[in-house]
Image (cartoon, rainbow, N blue to C red; front, side):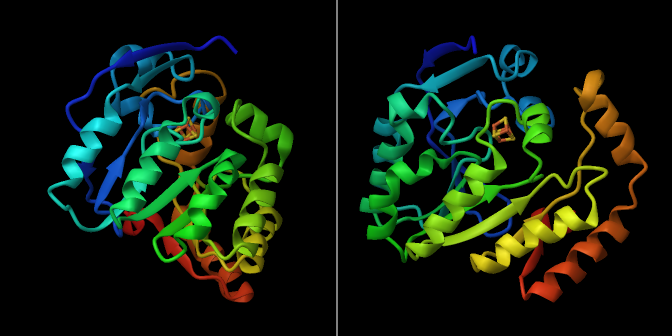
Length: 259
Ligand code: SF4
């Protein structure tokens, strides 16, 4: 995979957030090598990165130093890592920026939520288990079909690797959650049920969100999905998800307050 990595300085590390249950977000990079075809983040970043989604990543080279300064002002609340990029995308293996952000946040007593599609998070299991009262880890699982996942989330770890990672974290006592978002148009009841079952087994609440149609979904498979999403009765789908969650004793939470 040819990815251009650019290094740039930033002026801020933490961003205030209006998301429910999230006080701050921190994104180690702009851009994401996972290159999901539905990724909304591409609409909110520099034009060049958005237009070449998945093949340009800007590493925030001074983010650790800025974060340390910002934490001196003692901001309180839960910090989520990340919302606009995957904190454990492939370059993290070598860069270790996420690991160092995590260390800084935890040493300062911050609550940290991690959201990823990568089992590289298990590399940092030592930090997570030492701070069970501060951390939670969420995995995005949109499908369990390996081939379909490859089509829509081309460079992310397979759903099976994500499931094994969430099971491992849960066994180790780390609080976990699943984000089924976006709910892909055409996802059948059996598949939703299988995802909910994993949530049940790992004692994870299930956040879910509808497929949101964005301006960049103009061609190829993304356009097809957007077209199908426009014909989906979201209210009915949401009711079905809630019913399945009830059956498995899983807490269902519409992400973004269901908006
Ligand atoms: S892993 Fe997340 S941030 Fe990265 S491309 Fe996929 S949806 Fe976007």
